Amino acid sequence: MVTIGAGPAGLAGAIEAARNGVEVVAFDENERPGGQLFKQIHKFFGSSVHQAGVRGFNIGSGLLDEAQKLGVEVSLSSVVLGIYENNVMNVMIRDHIEQVKAERILVATGASENMIPFPGWTLPGVIGAGAAQTMANLHGIRPGKRLLMVGSGNVGVVVAYQMLQAGCEIAAVIDAAPKIGGYGVHAAKVARYGIPFLMSHTMKEANGKEKVEGATVIQVDEKWQPIPGTEKSFDVDTICIAVGLNPMNKLVRMSGCKTVYVPALGGLIPAHDLNQRTSIPGIYVAGDVSGIEEASTAIIEGRIAGLAIASSLDYLDEAAFVEQRDRQFQNMKGLRTGSHGEARRKAKDYLNAVMKG
Amino acid sequence: MGESEKMRIEEHPILGTFEKGKKVQFTFDGHTLEGFEGEPVAVALRSNGVLVHRYTTKRNEPRGVFCAIGRCTDCIMVVDDVPNVRTCVEPLKAGMVIQTQFGKGPEMSE
Image (tube, rainbow over all chains, first blue to last red; front, side, top):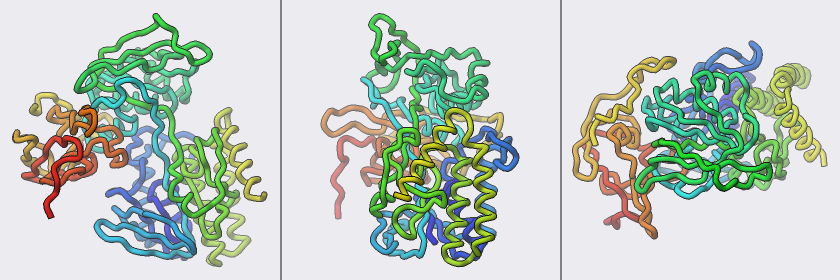
């Protein structure tokens, strides 16, 4: 089995498959494994089975240790360039290209950030929220001195708080939506610093010639139209964009699998059943590429895929598979509750229905 | 330019201090600067107050770090005479020669 991506979903899938005897190679294009987990310095939610209260980077180290103990080969700086017929892949490993054939492929390529364009958005100093996290939490450098956060979803509020921890100032958190999108717990941590949340506000422009020297925001009406005369300016050197994620589906689409556009899951999603199987025999998906959720759900999906792969290769008998998989279904239930979780659960059910035809 | 900007996090409340390689010198457009070996070139530049990495081909507009994970290619520069190097994922080495990239950068000799 090959997993494409050694983030939370890919590693969890590799672990479950390897535990049952499957030979696993995990390819990751980065120099370090773990996907985005090592940038997550906040404590996770859920109950103890979801490792609630454990910080993301510790979950990452735990998965990595376990994978290595089980003999999973993690191949870094390895970019899977394409998936072709009969589960053949071309993989660029550092400076050469190898052809690899796997009996099963778990595509766990994750997501990329959405962006909103506005005048000045290409200026140095306008960055993705992920970039801010990478710089501060991995490399120990502040992306800027004073930041404006665009987007109040979980990424926006979590990263805003992380920037405060890094010693940056936050001028404000803005969002075009009328309500804060992120969990109350995360938003409250930012609000306690006295940072204003400007709801129903969007970017008008980034000011500056060579780099960001300020930001102008404007209020929007209920039809998302800017209201002239409501502009406000902030003296900031950095504008951080956190307006959602979209599934990194390019590679899996090359396999020719069936896809469905599902707004609740962030975009074009490879259809998959409850065992994370796509419409192409032998190809599975897990984590953000199969619908934008969270690292904790990605880990469970990865485990389900790993178990299903082990079972499909006869390393796990039907009864043991069903028992272990159902335990993961149970763990997942707790994470797909609330209005957001419920919408995601329904979307997943829909994808399963698409698979059945 | 220079470390006067104080962008590095000395003591992080959750992460403590950051493990870095040894301090090394490199040049940026002819100026000698300092950074830590193995960290991304873009991080060393940011610590020295450098935000503009290149100017675009058609409109000559400034660009810098955007995604910081090697995906968007906005931060490319000329590194040791090689153009289009993604500085956010290129590890810094002692004596590296880093230059602002204009357009597609200089022609490479065979």
